[in-house]
Amino acid sequence: MNRHTDIIRKRYDRIASIFDVMDHMIRSSWREEVLGNLHGDILEVGVGTGSNLPLYPSNVHVTGIDFSPKMLAKAYGKIEDAKATIALREMDAQQMDFLDNTFDVVVSTCVFCSVPDPVEGFKEIRRVVKPEGKIVMLEHMRSENPIAGKLLDVMNPLTVRMVGANVNRKTIENIEKAGLKIKEQTYLMTSIMRKLILSPNK
Image 1 (cartoon, rainbow, N blue to C red):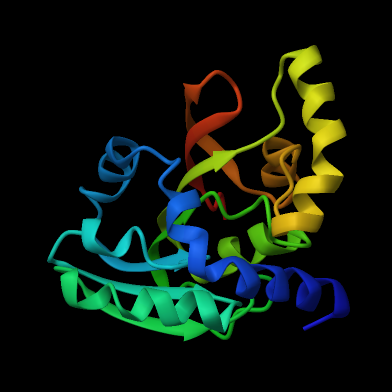
Image 2 (image 1 turned 90 degrees about the vertical axis):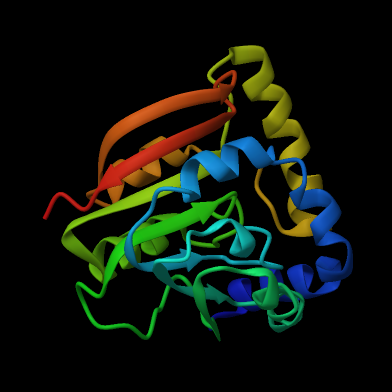
């Protein structure tokens, strides 16, 4: 783990005790729509405190990874409320310890604002998902509105310093740089919050 990643990890360790409150900003209906109809072996990247874990269906196996041990400690407490089979591991999304073509589905919800090298994280997802698999995401990113986008640019140094999250990431560009294909894109809150379904396009 490089120095920049370690700094961000420590910031997420610091806010682990209040992260559930912050995470509730993602509407439960959005989560349920994304997670309720998945099948097979699932990787959740940036599982955080485990807000998604109770929403997975009973017929799946979920491996959740996060680079923050204090976040994972919170997530373990939610396993007993889950219907799915859950395994949690401390791991960096930029350097995953999985073989190529391991998972049927990869999930992320508001994760790629905090991955220090998002393109590298997306490349790792592309590597570990099966060629016929899919990537399902709920992600916030820089607004396409010029004024709102500039405002997010101004806010970004503060949010990174406080909680480790970038509010002005150009996530669509990062996805394309990593060689992933966008199959579906739905705006949930103007252009800032989006549901994405990606293909590894191998």
